[in-house]
Length: 310
Length: 188
Image (tube, rainbow over all chains, first blue to last red; front, top):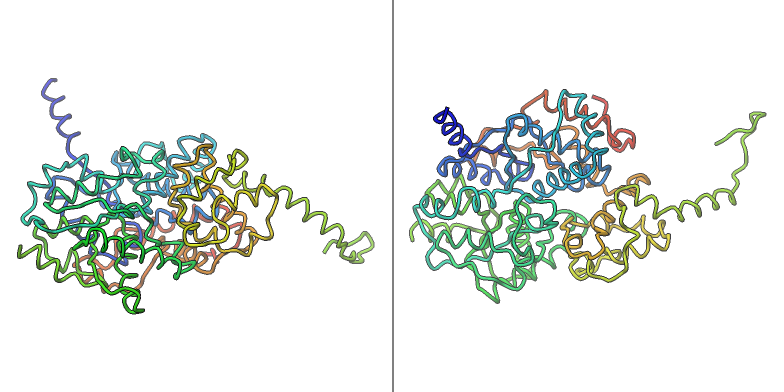
């Protein structure tokens, strides 16, 4: 009896998450997906494929049409984890935001939950509100832990200064998220994750500023580039970072891609490589750069060589 | 057009139409509340939301505080032509700081939902909806060079490679308001 209980407890301890990919990561930045697939087995975390997952749905789609429809699409995705008794895990802030806002709405509105379940019944599913979506940064910080990360790496980031970009949906509205920064206007999780790799990750004034991606960029690119330019200039001026590290796929694309556009337009005269944290960790673990960090617009070769060759 | 008892079409009664539209304008607060912005009426125009809003910072016309004021004054038509609500990144800084639990983000999105009913929806949003329905991914690419380059299978384990899952998603979408609005073809 005692023994069986111990075995069960050990089984509970084994970390397992449904790898929720979203859209931008598998199609635009699959090197981020590959990095996730490489780092988690090393850290003792099992990944479920979450077969049949779809778009979260992102902000410009169902959330803009109808709340019940938004929650139904989100709930179908959450069901895929709930059916297996696991939470989802994402490296995309939009997915993190949309799935958790939808869950929060359903948990606080029984009528909405029952309307959603009526829709899910048509495909033989039911959502109980148990499964949630965790953020990859929080899983690494809280469930895996900084010590285990330190033990897992082959290369350390000595003398490298990082500008962190946690991104909006990692922080706000804190009410809906399963994990919360002590002060969401002064986030420390990503800074500590970077410091665990041996880097400096200082505060800078525009640390929590929006990168201008998503709806803002598709509505008015010029205004969007104003935001990203201010952010980049502040990073250069205040901390002269060697590298920008984010835990959001949208911020990754914006900071990497918009930077190149600004340079081409003669509006920016410097270049700072950008990586998702899972990519940086995969590089530090010694995985093949081509596979875990092979897709970018702003060149990364120099910083990758510095990491690998020390 | 409504026909009279004798089958003769009625003339357009412009005063009636104007009256109806005026009433609808007065209902705008109710409409956005029904669309998810229940707490709109508690706004006291303190401006906390505007102070943290990325849209306000880069000069969009109808940023959160101003949009709420306009709605509370019963304005609607003036808002329908403006792209501001569609530029909202849903960052929710406003929700975090609002002292009256208005959730200005919900107001932005309720206005989007109202605009959708009037077909005031950006082309890009339609494309995203179409891709969501067709493939299960709002951002979808047919080219798979990037996936191959990093050593991944051409298709992710999503609706992209799972016919039944895509069918399930379509069943859900067909039974939502999206189908009633008729914004995208949803035949198969």
